[in-house]
Length: 130
Image (tube, rainbow, N blue to C red; front, side):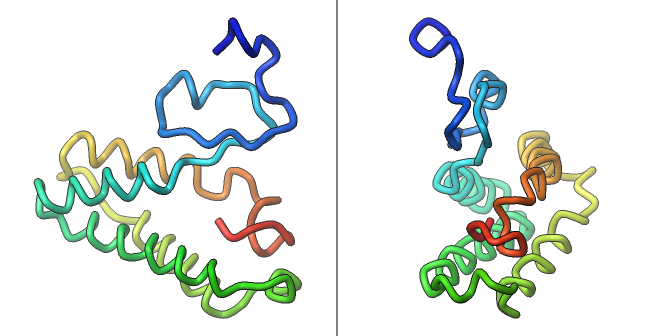
C-alpha cells in the first residue's frame, strides 16, 4: 500500500477489516467494515455459543436496518431509535469480557477503542449513523 499510496488517503474514509496495517493507514477517517464484524460475530456465536456475540450481531443488524430508514431530516437531531441503539451498544461494551475467548475479548477491546473515536461522523453531529 505504501508503494502505491505513499501519502495514504488523507481525504478519504478508509474502511478496513481490522488488520493492523490497515488501521495504521493515513486517512481522514477510519471505519471498521461491518460485514467483517458481522462475520466474526457470527463465527463467535456459533463456535463459542456466547450470548454477547449474538447480542452484538443482532444490534448491528438492527442498526443497519434503521440506517436504511433514515432520511436527511433525521440528521437534524438524534432520532429516539438511534439513541436506543447507542445506549444498547454502550451496555454491550460495558461487559466483563475477562472470561471470553481471547479473540472475542480482542474484538470487545477493539470496539471499545473505536467507539466514538470520530464523533463528527455520528448522527448527533450531522454525519452518518455509526
